[in-house]
Image (cartoon, rainbow, N blue to C red):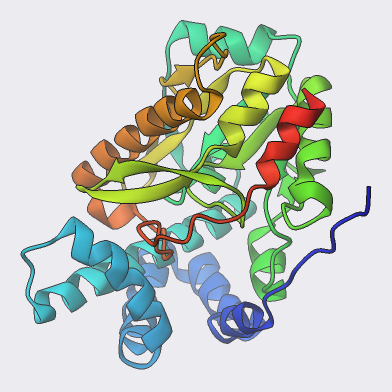
Length: 321
């Protein structure tokens, strides 16, 4: 079998580098260290306005979601929503930096059932931690040092070196986190299944296909396309899936919700893809409920409603299970 080459989008890398550099992160970091969180947030007001006016690509990406979430909003109101979305995203980046400076800077309240906690702590096999581009899952992950399991993250290597260095991407309590590149050989399927078989807590994005096959499910009242890869891998390895959702409830307080869990197991005689669609649909319904309550915590910036259904690399899972 010939290994697939990792595909890098040079235009994406350029855009990301333009949206953040070492000097900019230094300014925010220095402001936070010298004047505190509120001062850093205040500085963010000016940067957010700059992006709203000059970064048309970012605004267009955000509007795809804003139009679906606020269907009755006029043009001016849509831009007001975009600005609030940008502002909240910037605040969450600052929060991530704050935690690299002081591990217990934020107070965390964890919502989970005892069954979920026992599954993560006591399971001999791996667990799929289903993350999303909503809330601040990175902050929650930085608080999971008490878990017994090693952590693996399925993500593209950070295109922006300033982001990686300033926010500590790829580190966890000073210990390296295993990063599995979804653009590598077979989309990283081999490495993901190996990590799960070794008992890792494997973090996978449930709302970004990265070129993998998707299923159509409703999201915010419209047909959308979400990947079924995380559930396919979980079913193939006998691993449970736990959704992670986070929300900031006060200046220095977060809630991490891990109360939703699935145990994907195929029923013989039924279509595997339809069973996968059911699990994905339940997850997406959970996302819809979350963004209806917290509209400015959704950072998709990707058209999940597009008819582009991605590729079908996850079919390789069937050959390996």
